[in-house]
Image 1 (cartoon, rainbow, N blue to C red):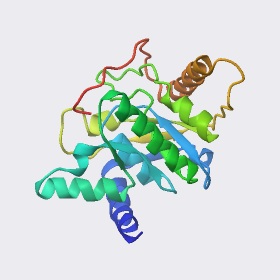
Image 2 (image 1 turned 60 degrees about the horizontal axis):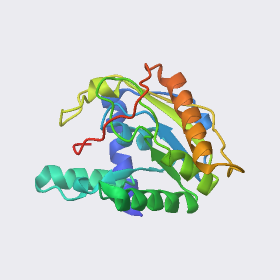
Image 3 (image 1 turned 60 degrees about the vertical axis):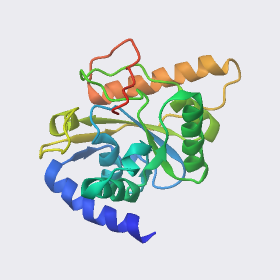
Length: 221
């Protein structure tokens, strides 16, 4: 489609000028076929930046509110995130969570790259929180490898609570792909173990302190 190409063509040079990203380990990201990019989440900028530094489109879920804003800023936001491949999903409740998983799986079954933040919401204190097992469910259901990723510095250029990012220096690191076949035993236990392994890999890339609890989901994220 023309619009995503135009949006990307416009935003890539702007993002490189504004954030001067250092990109490490990009060779770990497969150039074709389904892949899950599992990243930490310290800023609203994270889901925009990964698709911009990747050589292939990376699709993320985004709350429906990003697609319904009014005025010039709402139109700009809607155009930008749509052009970057964001997929609108409702927030809250079991049905919404299931719809999000099904939308994510459809992206992978179509042979595309899908980005996810296993923590579920942004970290307010900079620590890396416990991962939710949806990422492992997706990996096992799709057979797609999981590439761990770390964003460093996005919390400084776009802190929680600010509307517009400011110029600054950021780093995006990609790690070696992880593979998780369908389990022979307890699926729940296998998903938990796989998720913990993914979070360990993200922590090694990001250098963040760890939190032993889940992050609280906020309606503002």
